[in-house]
Length: 425
Ligand SMILES: NC(=O)c1ccc[n+]([C@@H]2O[C@H](COP(=O)([O-])OP(=O)(O)OC[C@H]3O[C@@H](n4cnc5c(N)ncnc54)[C@H](O)[C@@H]3O)[C@@H](O)[C@H]2O)c1
Image 1: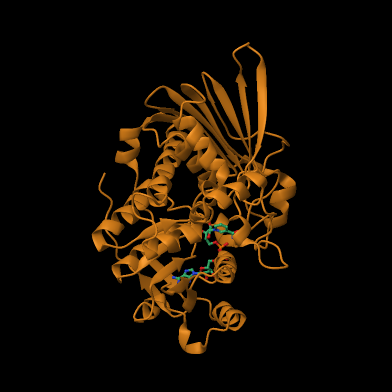
Image 2: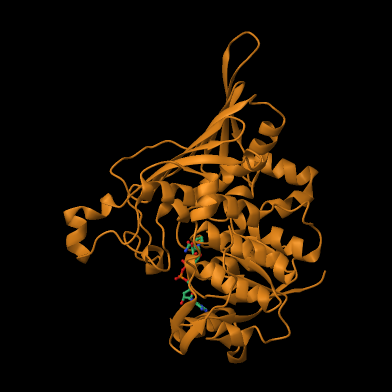
């Protein structure tokens, strides 16, 4: 098996999850080697090098210097949202395949620029969307494609935290999550990608017609909260939307980081013959993200995704069937016993390495860049509609979306200028 030589850009929290997955995959026979890392913060860079045994000549503050190496096969981009397009297009322009963190970008225009960069530079790209790499998503997608739910007419995409704004209520998360220029958006883009992308993917990527959206920053204005930081609403705390797709499907979207409410339900898909409820949707990366003897970086338990299938039998009796479909559960284990190759569909990073090796092709891999870009398209519709106070059509989203990705970044060693294409609607 050919060794894949990996470089990491951004040595913050999520880079450690990448390293955990790499370690776990190596223990399962994957030939992987992290050969270099780049991080603008020198202390973080040195700590990363010390933790993973990377010598000083493999550590770079300026990722552009690292990209001059000739021993890198692919680069994993772990910087924050509004730098994904900036850094990932630079990686591909320098001649490397690229695995980029989620969300794909902070606007549809930027997601499209990054998507198009694959073709422009002839390089491979993947975007992290952990919710779609497990039996829960696959079983639902197959059932829908086979018509088990009949004609699909309504879908709900839900994500909720009682009080969990990263970088604020969860201070161990980077403050960049709530920076208007770096994180840019609240929960809609942050955790929303896991839920919206999962729903779009199981439906077979339906074509968006229009969307009505509403975003709010009002949770931040609670006086007890405001007193603590003397600051209000850096980014939204709630995003809701109602989208209409070709074929008569509507999707309501509900994504919050903090709200004075406990249970707001979960994602589901309903059709004329049946319905599917999605429980414990994966947002933490599955079993490979769990370090040996430890817990998943950033907190959060290993999620065990489940489905509940609702319908009516021939005698008009209502049925409700629970499907345990986590990778480690019986369903997941049985699938792997019969089809060991499905392991390539159970983990974001393993899927990426399998694609790089040619074990998966453009046809057989999950097209995460396309799914992530369409998710950004719908999410931007919610944002634009909320700003305009009216619904927006797909054509309007395409016409109004703007590139906002960072083109000049201040760093401890000077300004990095990013040079990438302009967006064309
Ligand atoms: N933290 C999580 O649990 C988590 C989970 C899934 C996805 N993500 C995604 O991963 C991304 C990063 O999140 P994070 O929590 O690791 O943030 P973080 O702030 O901890 O890490 C980002 C790192 O990138 C570095 N950086 C910025 N610009 C750089 C540049 N030009 N070159 C090199 N390094 C640079 C920063 O100094 C920082 O250390 C976000 O887009 C987030 O949505 C995070």
